[in-house]
Image 1 (cartoon, rainbow, N blue to C red):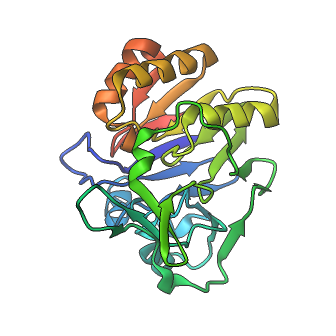
Image 2 (image 1 turned 90 degrees about the horizontal axis):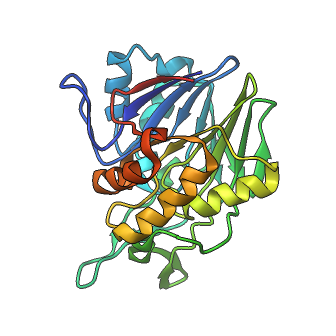
Image 3 (image 1 turned 60 degrees about the vertical axis):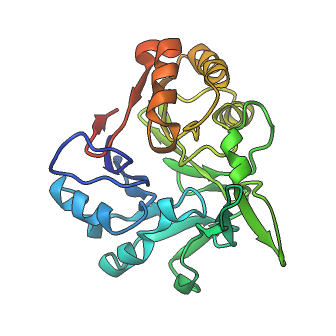
Length: 268
């Protein structure tokens, strides 16, 4: 399995630009997958430089309904005419960010893309094939990101705190190895792993994605790190985890966590 970070908040090379967003290319025995599309068309430019032919992608998974994960979707659809796009059924609801004394900012997906026959809308769990599956409906409030309080969803004419029912996660099974891919883990990486454990009766071997800890209290990050350390999984984090929180996690977990920046390539 090959994973290439097409877009992430920082770049590990001058040849590739970065942005606040996430896009991963994942190549398995049976699939060429695009997990999220970043905030813009930048993932296309970086893909070409990283020898990734996006027209060969056969499946796209959008982790949740925020522009920094699905902002490049329109561009992708224009260059690839065959891949199905898997989204949680609530992904196109109205999503906003809000900080005290500032205007509410629309951070949702482009609604002009609807309707589209290539979109597959998922409820709680969907088995794509023996290699891939998606799940959402993660419950629990253990160590959820405090930054969620600045993220809203529109319900009628009112704004309420987003419950992140529109967030989904990808499971990849290959050669006995289990990989969990998250976008931002707004539901809390601990709760996501607990959900995975409850459904599968084991913990994934590898976890890749953002954990939404950018401005989290160090003590909370340390508690999350202790939980992750006990799983014995290998973690590759990025995007909304934030460098400061990553460094804190690293002091707790050690070499079992690494940072995945634009241009990073993994073989699992």
